[in-house]
Length: 334
Image (cartoon, rainbow, N blue to C red; front, side):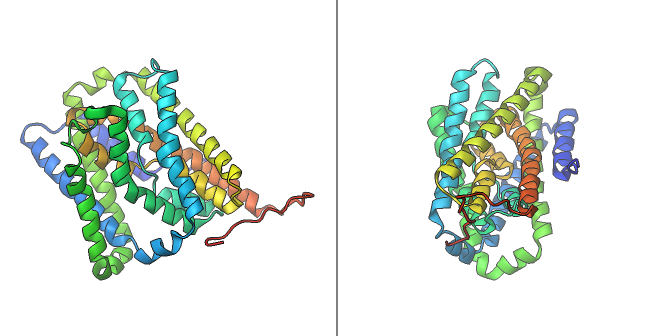
């Protein structure tokens, strides 16, 4: 059965189309830039408010699986990106390669990683903690990795580490401080807050693509280039899935842990990536740079949804006894 079209994907496509037809100009640029900064800060504040300290404390004891997932996210992916760039330098132009390498530096998703792990009957508790920890560390590690890859050009549009601290980390810490008072309210209004999160991404995407369109985005990005980006993102995802699964088996993780490593270790976060890009890169470059990330986001949803359903069917099938097989699924804290 075909997966239902993601509403957020449609909103992204509409936003890109609107920015292409009616990009903001003049005073509107300053208005939308200010609005984007406010909404990004609000998004990270609410993330801090929603994050339960108890859940992190309980899950962080399963350190082996967290180390495996973080290694996939922040070590394996950058190495894959640099390796593909060295092997196939002419497949994409400079801006698209920057976008691919940038997405390799980003943290994992939270919601879809947990959702797919749950569907596949994996270790959900570990997925929650690892995906959350990935996003917290990503605030520091993503800019650091981008700096290592691109040198001084990585902060050309953002002025160094201070914008990261002021726009992302300070609101997150403020949310954690306010968590005892507003954490329960945040959990009761998940749909409203999800709308706020996605709305902030749409505002950033509209602002970035408006700037890019006025700079001649679609003249610089022919359809053939988009097709090659789709091929590159798909190949990158399959490589990440395969290597993550092999690493999990080599580490002798149980089935439920392998599933969590597979789904958390192969994802890249659009929700974190767009705000980080808006801080690290020049406004005129963001539209092109986030294009590979937007495409990867949709590719990972479709392929991982298919894999999750397959794992779920396997879990529902009666086990076939195999002589000498004694593997059991590990549980959180085992």
